[in-house]
Length: 152
Image 1: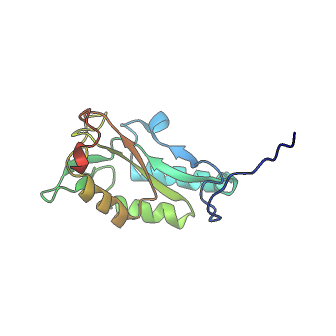
Image 2 (image 1 turned 90 degrees about the vertical axis):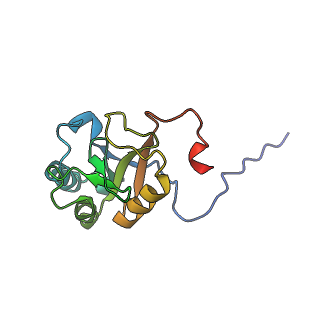
Image 3 (image 1 turned 120 degrees about the vertical axis):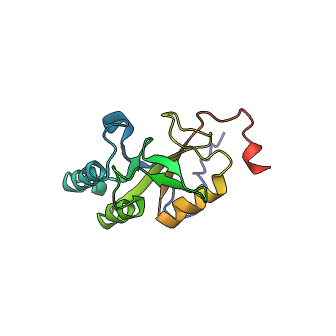
């Protein structure tokens, strides 16, 4: 009997060659330490330690970055923690050669009771894209059990 192995078939575009690797703020900073200064310091350390060259390309900001939604429904970053706003931080992380990840939640609140995206998913997706967010960690706290409700 002849066995022939045929390798995986896919696009030859570099996507998926390794898992998305990087740093996530939750296990280190939790809510109390999520600030632009702390995240910028982590970006510097990731580059100086050579982690980016090893494939650890993502710096992901987890829950607790947003404090409100504005009248148009967009998420507002904590002005005390991010005095220059999230777009400035995204730009800083990108300037160091890293990719920027951000936390969101499909529920009306995040797991830490910050504003969620429930009912506002299209607006928040456009906002994240406009900011240059490369990766979204999307949670499901305080969301309905109907996963299709947002798309009706």
